[in-house]
Length: 438
Ligand code: ATP
Image (cartoon, rainbow, N blue to C red; front, side):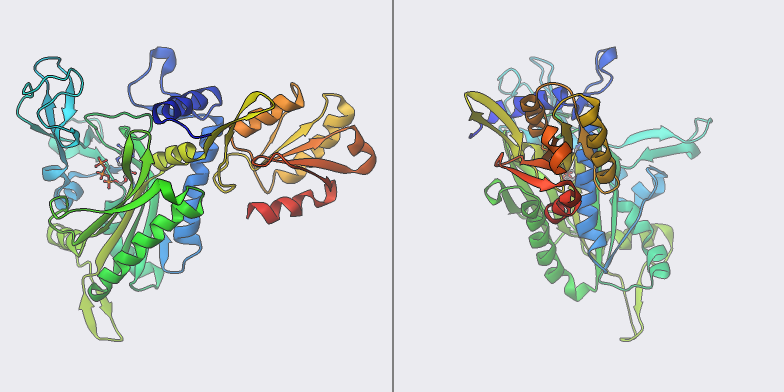
């Protein structure tokens, strides 16, 4: 069924709450604006998003290695990167209604979207988005620390460590997944923009002459990744930045955008950053961050191509792209048509009745599958309702153990999308799933 945009947004928020995907944080204390907790189902899905990214970006490649850098960081890093001076958003207040907005995100820079008044904004103030804290018990300047606003700097400052220890040479990528923090002026749209979020970033270091070609490569590769993981091509586009949007050091940036209920918006940015970051850290740290190519007897500062995605934002896009309701036997069936790699549970084992003669062998089958996949188990309520519950959280296969199973040693497997059922010997279930879930 096609979904109207505002409807879809509300349906995703409601489903998330109802099925343990995403909860508003600190709810028992009245909530804490724009923070979210990932529930029992959501945590699986978020892990799968990150795992799918890691699989494509690290596991299946020999030119990318991983990193997990610290979140707390000294001011020196952010001084060098330019974040202390420039990581600001222009904040305007409406004199009429008091609402606060990010000036660069307004449709009309003179009109307040909250009250509709024209010409009531204050002069923009530049507001730094970094969270500042202190490390250690003494509050002096020496103790200032920042929560990282992006994971990228971890890769730049460790470039020499990685080159010296990995026995690899450019083109070489360093990938990282982790939390980042930004004191956003206008968080919102559910988990689209939050102050605490997770990023999945790659810094791909290349010989300068190869930068343009690798930039093109990563733009195509990253767009394809979303398609390969189940988002329809019509809901995605690659939007090159205009010259006025480009940072001074970037010779090209494109965003992968998704058709969100409020319009096209960014999922990921891919930037050709030149040697800006390594140059800055060399200048500020006094350390050499170069590569010496022995074969060519040549020393150079690599250029960097950066595909930077958000894990939490991507999860939301996957939810929106997968959501469907349809009428089946006069009832609405809600189904998340998620790619099996992204689906929270890969299968659910459902004994037809709560009688121990069925639940015993059903649990044996569960135990056999659990080492390989996340498999849910549910023995309460009518089977039809249990199927619907699994449809709502996107479980690709429901495995029903019924009274005949005791005799024929077979189970019924129901497909989430087509609702077709097949009867399969229990001994073959593992291989059957493996073929479809890889
Ligand atoms: P915007 O212009 O929307 O503030 P950005 O262009 O500054 O974002 P990047 O610095 O390129 O974002 O970050 C890379 C990715 O990290 C984004 O494409 C997005 O998926 C994710 N991201 C950035 N900020 C947030 C946030 N506040 N909440 C959730 N995800 C975010």
